[in-house]
Length: 59
Length: 489
Ligand SMILES: Cc1cc2nc3c(=O)[nH]c(=O)nc-3n(C[C@H](O)[C@H](O)[C@H](O)COP(=O)(O)OP(=O)(O)OC[C@H]3O[C@@H](n4cnc5c(N)ncnc54)[C@H](O)[C@@H]3O)c2cc1C
Image (cartoon, rainbow over all chains, first blue to last red; front, side, top):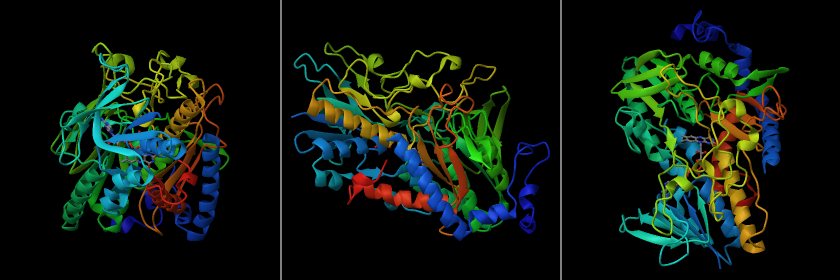
């Protein structure tokens, strides 16, 4: 299993006709973006703004 | 001078008490009755449960904080409410029993002009045979519902990690321990934090991980799921949840009522009637919640608990409890002032108020077992309710009994939730979500029930940073440190 954690390993977690056969899985780029500090710093600002808007609408 | 008594110094009660003290405390009395000597930022317990934070990081002593601002603090648990007083006096009061070292078990009556019930949930482990006795956790599973539980969970988890390092394969089963549970979010966070820690420890390939929950679909979270805008689509939380479970190689059982737990084994019944059992080496199953079991007594000594409380022990408020079947449910069934309909000087906020009905569609197995999430009342709504009730009581005291009450319906408010999927400054992730409104309003927002301009979610490091910052912000706010009133709930 440890050998398999490269490339398309998330697709390999899908079990044909199992629970997770009909869902989507992220590719390496989407995964990399999740912890890419520069991109996430931008998302940090964007998410905070979105949250503040919802908090503002709720008080 | 009026006296406001707040039962429960958790997220909702502490918010209500501290704002009341700030607004009217110099002229009136604010009293908090709560059994624990420490306040706990519960959302961070999941990090205690994996050893990434300590109990001390998520708690602080309440007494000095209350003393600093002049709140009268009783370390005690409320037993009963006498809303009409008794034969000797018309003055309403609560009976409390001390939990403070040195006076444990001593009872006392505390009179009030206004009462806020913010006693949160009774952790009803006893509802599932083998999960525990009454409110006490049993020996077969762990819990992250309190900081002490979480510390114990971390200890057990690290034993598992050591065994896996020594070459033993281990099975993890995380989720809900009964068909009528809420708080799936906490279990969701815990399973992914464990998965993250196992990867960090280099033993992920030695672990089989499984989720078990009473949701009818993955991503329901007790709010009937939510649709989020993504790449121009309105995408169901089911897709996102299933995607994350697949990516992290976590299998799932859903629509499950766990009906018995034994050493290393959980028995369950599914919505389709199937019965099964699942083995585990490590399991965290959230217990169902109920009200804490306060009694209500009339002036003549008659038990009027049924008048004040719903059968599940939560306090009745201005909700529509007669909505009936799912097809008849409306957003307007949800309460907005949290005032008790019988006694106008009693309010309930946070988990302690009786919801009119669930949010997710209720379902039953062919044998008639109800299996479906009960409605969550997460941190932000609980805080907002506490502040709203404090606002109303402030006005009733300062402007007179006719002052209009403030409103905060869960069908009109949103919530920001950050669900951790692993802790780490550069490799942590969390699903940051907003949901608006919490209770779907299918008349106002046909189709999804929510405004998809304000309902969104994404997973990433930014979410983790937010969750971490929120931990420090809310610990700062709850300790009433500089600028605390500026931090929103
Ligand atoms: C593990 C976990 C993780 C969570 N994570 C999140 C999250 O990430 N985000 C989020 O928004 N929400 C989260 N929640 C939910 C959140 O903790 C609750 O929404 C919130 O605590 C509810 O506030 P409350 O004041 O109603 O109840 P509580 O905070 O539980 O407070 C109730 C208080 O009443 C006291 N009490 C009990 N019995 C009595 C009595 N008889 N007399 C007087 N006092 C009494 C209790 O000791 C307690 O202090 C999580 C919950 C759990 C269990």
